[in-house]
Length: 484
Image (tube, rainbow, N blue to C red; front, side, top):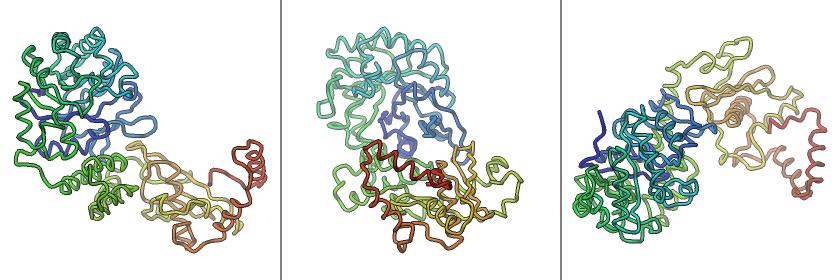
């Protein structure tokens, strides 16, 4: 089914906002089409496409293991992938990579911010009609999915119409027009007359954008904006960011209800908590100094956010469901069972569901340091960590061997270091030893660390002083900095 851009209400592409949870929420509330945030071609070409069977998503993962773009079956026929590019060949390579997972490809030609324009992308393209034509023609001829673009208006109506006619000849499926000039920002009025002139000058569907600040406050205003601009469709940005239920024909919902619905999607799809927090702060807007706003601002994890909104049980049930799904998938013997080289049975390993949360531990020490110190005190060999990475989602799980016994967490973690800390915690808890959590009685190790910090009066900006410390540390034959 080919995506139509006629008579639609659309979630606009917004940096840090147009991620999967927001897009799904907008669809729930009545949006016909949703655009992802602008993603730069070079970054996308570094990504690996992973089918995530646990979350039932398709994830494009960067070499840093960060999920750059995530989508799912629910939005497949209605999500438009917006790309930042200034190069036809790179644009086509990304489009071919992504086209089977999205409904259309859009080229950003309207963003005026430096992160977009400095590479010749975004609004910088507006002064290069030849490049615009080459990029769009290359995409239209190179992929089967519809191609669109989003522009800002030029200094005059005539210049704007001339550019749009060039774009129309490339064969694009639609043109989104933000009714502000390159130098104008949200406080400036939207030029509805420019959008109307464009709508009347071309036969391709025109999508009107830019009315949030002064014109669109409820669903009925969307139709009014469409009427005054004579556009085929309307694209909503900030009004949808503030309250995605703007797309409800029946009227917007209370803000906190919308925020809770957003959090549900964020938890279900493992959205990074910093992105979740950012979007929630945009919804709260001028209420950031309210009791709820202050609590939200203080959060440091998805669980913290859920606690603020009294959704802890939902978070825990989602986590449990995902863990069960991981087990049921039985990805591979290597990935679901951590064994040593002798293939010792998993039941010989002490396991418990543990994660290392940095905020819960004292700043001077880590569980791995506690375990290493205890082994030295007991005259045991230092702990040995064996870690594997799961291909399904690139997460890690570690088993630590201490005094010929093995310990590990049943939970997979996003980095090797975190997985090792979790394994150390399992061992320490099993042995009834302190692990360095905030509130624990001060241990010999903590006191030793404090004394060490006080004794080390060397200026750490002094290279000679730093070398002296390194020599003293490495003079201990048992020293292994991987255990810190």
